[in-house]
Amino acid sequence: MSTSRITFIGHASVVVQLEGLTLMLNPHFGQKALFRKRQRPLTLMPKDFPEPDAILINQVGYSHLDLHSFKYFSSTMPVIVPLGLTQFIGPFIRNPVIELGDYATLALKNHVVIHQVPVSFRGRRLLGFRNQASCGYVIEGGGQKILMTGDTAPESPLDQVTERHKIDVAMLPISPIQPRFLKQSRFLNPDTALQLSERLQARTFIPTHWGSFRRGWEKVNKPKYELQTRLSQTAYQGEVVILEPGEAWDMGVQ
Image (tube, rainbow, N blue to C red; front, top):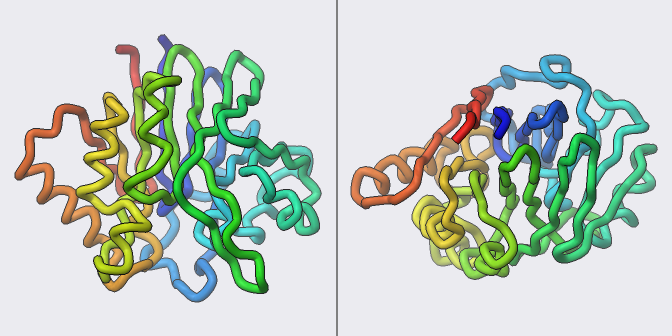
């Protein structure tokens, strides 16, 4: 089994490197996600990585799909999106767009395979482009399976992932938190993300969607602190790796 590297750029932006490939998930290198300002400076830019082999987008929301960030990438680079997003993204970029429906797969080079997995969330954008499909991706390569979900509700089709995949690493969002009466049924928070990671039987849980853009009433680091508190109070069975924005983690041979 080879070594993979996961780099947390911030919020939903992650770089996965495995089997000689570089995959850029939800690249966002701007200072705003619509009206929300970035709360800490970016420490990494596209030039700090090899040219990606593919870009993966989980959903159409502004924190996941930043059209201005495509200026950093070659127009020949394939962009993988949920079913139905070509109609929106196609007019704005020149890249080949590949849609994946529920449980569809896409083989890349070096025996790396992208598996689409459905989630319970609908991406939204202004100008009438709302309630569009979202998805997660299982990235398989070198005997490892890495899950990146984007936003999802606590009760979602992700519970069925274990019927198809043995997840080594689960990257799950932990915000927004407040106000709870509005957010807890639509989004994962530190508590429900830990519960989902356990149900997925993931060996390692990496929290995302914190530290960059303020989404709920809480400050951007509050989700991390709540997660740390929860971990000190519970006997979580797996490994939790909390990456600060800009940090990387090597997933070595097991």
